[in-house]
Length: 219
Image (cartoon, rainbow, N blue to C red; front, side, top):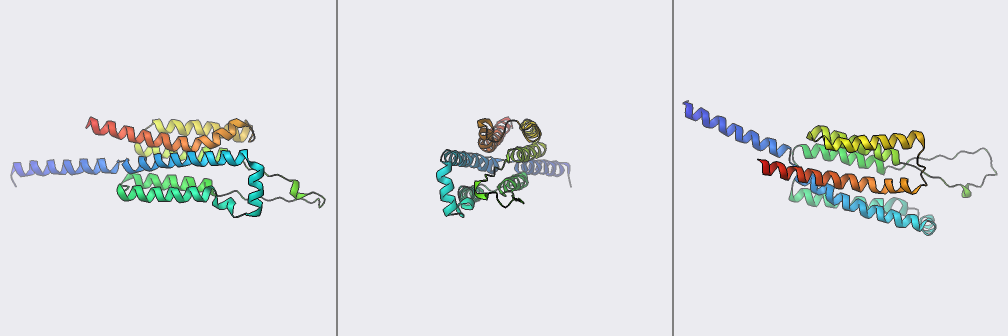
């Protein structure tokens, strides 16, 4: 084998390696899904806001149709999220690192969809259970799970900016969980709960999309 053939073989290997590296760190489909999901989560937040404003009316509806608690809005939003995923991944398949990151984020979302199990145990038979209102506060769990997923994404993509979101979320989740500030009924907590999910997905989606465009131009 002459020197020219060896040189061409080395160049071909370098080209192939470059293509593999670029493909393995392509975030085209991932960022697109995240942007669409972020918009979908904005819709979910608006629906929840309307439900909170019309709390008494919604309570009457759910008492008559308990199944709606599981179907709307979580079930409907989940269905649309799955449809978006399959449409985008069919046109632009998830490759390399995208698949692993998507698994992390889907598990993160699934963890927040699972409802908490609540037990009410009272030895006093005179207590009217119909007058008891149970509030669940999942803000710390939501923020902490988003922080872990953001930090994992930052570690796997080498984009340290994403870890800053995770650190901020960890701080807020710890303050809220252990210092009881602010309380669940406060407008600030409600706002954080509704904004954190769509903001995270839109930020990461647009961030990865922008960074990839810059890297492509740089090459």
